[in-house]
Image (cartoon, rainbow, N blue to C red; front, top):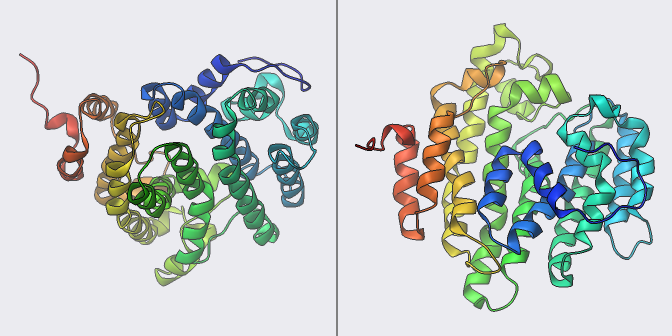
Length: 355
């Protein structure tokens, strides 16, 4: 990727599509199988969210400075504020790693003027659909940073706070998707069903991440999303969540969090079954992350302790490819059967090899 200096930028849709490939494997899979204009609208909308998420996760930025930088970003995204994205780029500059040391996430932050210029090239209806959920996400992240400022990292207290955090991190993205899907001719009943289940779709995906990424969240970002009261019930302090002597106890809380994620599967499925295939939307784009979440929950149930080590919990590349293959052919009516199959066993093991 480029190492351009901050300042006025030109739209660069190709760069945005390449950037998504670097920061999120799952979202890249989604964007790749959307059609235009939805593919580019989702791509750019996701990158706007990713800028905020990267700043919020940055353990090297003091909490007060994080909040100030996020507030500047919020104003830069709000078309009525009069603040330019270059102001954000200047504010975040001292916290950016050197160009040679930036990972893909920080390259996205560095290129925020390019992302916003590309966003401003989208049609007005799409921009109006994207902005409110992004602003709500940034507001929520700033609130959580302020709430946990003295701890130097997020320490989720209970299930209600966990759900609230997951809403701001991912439920807002579900609303963004829904705003884009419900433009134009969408029946009132379908639009209502989408709006009633959009947050749950996002909550499912985020809770799966919370369950499987405990080790990385703690060691790389100094965040503990496993609720403190659930850990306390097992005799574990949040600061020792990944200590080997607590592995068995902490693993039970990982399992409990994964079970909580599992409670959103039905509504997430209802969301997929209701979504219209318009504006370049495809079933495949959202079936893939849904079914991968089902597979990850299966693995979490069988080995929750891996979420507490560098090993991590993930499904195999072979299963990812098998899910991608079947998702391209799957219709609404096959979601329940696919979910049931993948919940039992890795999907690639259920597919008969070709002769």
